[in-house]
Image 1 (cartoon, rainbow, N blue to C red):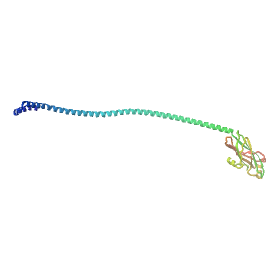
Image 2 (cartoon, rainbow, N blue to C red; image 1 turned 90 degrees about the vertical axis):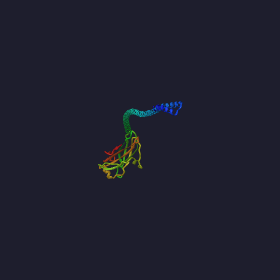
Image 3 (cartoon, rainbow, N blue to C red; image 1 turned 90 degrees about the horizontal axis):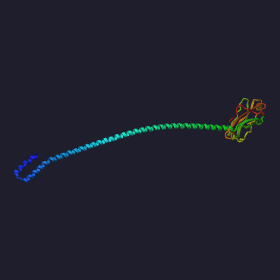
Length: 293
């Protein structure tokens, strides 16, 4: 408005004082008018541009904030969704694990029952095997007892029953078993003991007897006769005591032998003779000292 009022006044003064040509004055007036019209428009456009720029910046900031918010919320949503999925999966895994644990426990119980049954079966089988073994051993022992040799020793009348002579004992060894013996060897002695005394004889081992220089192993089926000398001569006084019954003439010892199963056995024997017929009578078997295996 200021430019619009001032321009006519200036134009009149300028025309009056300087006498500017009309065409030139007209051009200046038109330029001033256009300048007065352009200046407000330029200011409005600049303000509008500034406002638009600010709006764009605010919109950009708002969009940026919204994007950040969306990113945060989206991340939270993803995390929440992942948490839910993980929880569901964990719950399913726990359930499956519980089911697996229960199935494993049932399998363990079944294994324990099977192990117990196997143990009982093994124990039963072992008991059966032990019974069978014992039965077999019993049958074998019974068969061996039935088939093995059994030797008995009987004393026969003495000879050389005189003072100063070596009294000779005579024996009969009989096999009363089913099979013949082998490796028969005998250790014996002839002694005099007072009445009431229990006669005792040495019982060397079979190895000791077999190692003697004059030892002899016998093999027979049913019976064999054996003679054994007394270890010393007897005095007339000892012989008279035997004939009167005050003393006893004793013979005894042990016989070793093997059966067909190569098992070693032995028979112990003790016989006594006394009285007037001691030299010719068959000796009596003493109550003790007669044993065998």
